[in-house]
Length: 230
Image (cartoon, rainbow, N blue to C red; front, side):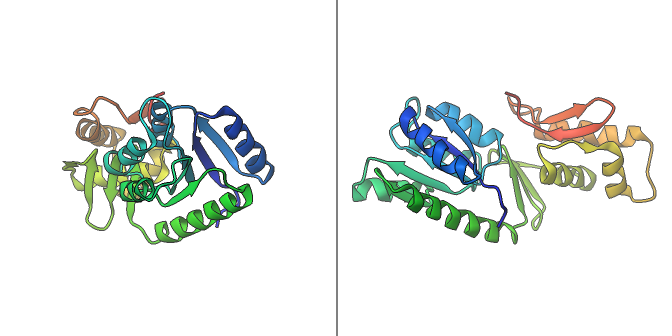
């Protein structure tokens, strides 16, 4: 398992968040936090985390709805641990049915919470190492079926555009140079730059034009990337 674990906490209790930061940062974890559901949803779909700690009773949209959108709308599979004061069996069942991976009732001993997180992250990474499904901000590429979807909408791509997308989504949100793309696609028979630009244009029309938020960015004099705007 990787040495550094990135955690997003979606929790409106500032004192609890500070306590979690103090504990986990001392152990070398990288921490991020959101005080409400909408901010948490934004961060969870924009950045890459290894685990999400999610309260049920948060301002804006509640934890159940955040989890539901992450799983159903954005197809994000990051392990989610519900950490909440609501501890009835009905609450727990709803949390798991919505897509939660673990459910912890407050108060919790932090060493126990840390071990639960490490176990979930380890299991998730073991599974993902065998997975050929790549997801960035709701844009999903299945390398086995060669199927592309965004927010559940099927997208048709020609083979070159599909290969470009595969490279970009595997590296998102990092920049991929034009030279790297051309070498990976055409090997030693590199065409004129206009050929790559034409395929980027077609790819952008397919994955971005029908949607409000644009993901495919041009980095001047360098290359391209998939990245969500702030």
